Image (tube, rainbow, N blue to C red):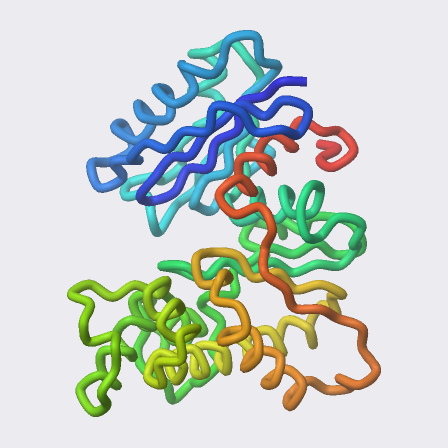
Length: 307
Ligand SMILES: [Zn+2]
């Protein structure tokens, strides 16, 4: 079986052929999101055009709130002007092939469930931590979409109602503490008071901070202790809610290793009710950039997605 899989984000469109679960011809092009939906849809068409020959269908994970059954993107914080866009119908007409769409984090979760870290598990929560913080739930062996397709959106759950203002207008959201730009902002604040190798870098990224933390830089380590603490609080809430056996963290910072995972696990141990009676693991994702593409191709697998 041969499908086109796409992972459409606010910055890049990643795409590839997925042939019997193997990724071929992986490519990345800009999504041109700031120019509006017409431009991004043209980029999506460009990405599909070079791959689509002899395939059985096109699966797309997209950074927005999607009505997967209708194939419509309802709205998106990352793709400007995407309100009620019938993406599946548009592409179906153009390519004369079946097209299925789903939220990008749900696609990543499907990929990790079928091919990656979550193989064989029935209760899983997956976090994506990048510019934004997203989530997806597999509960009792089924991906949970929710009544409106919004399930798992935990980036804007409040973990400190006296906390700083978030981009969504609320105060103290999880994303306000662990989103990439806030991690960088916090690192810069520490740099004003303490010497650190981080001050050599003109442009800081979470990946650079993670690397210096691994090298023993104390400011970088402090940053990840704090990020790990807040992620730990968010994960404690999720475990209390769903009791998953596996929590996966995906996105750039998931590669930080011990400097991130030690404070996460410590926080969960301290805060979770009945911790000693539970079986659960908190791990990094396995498939990286391929997860969303592989998950999008799985939308055609009847065993995983019966509708
Ligand atoms: Zn928020």
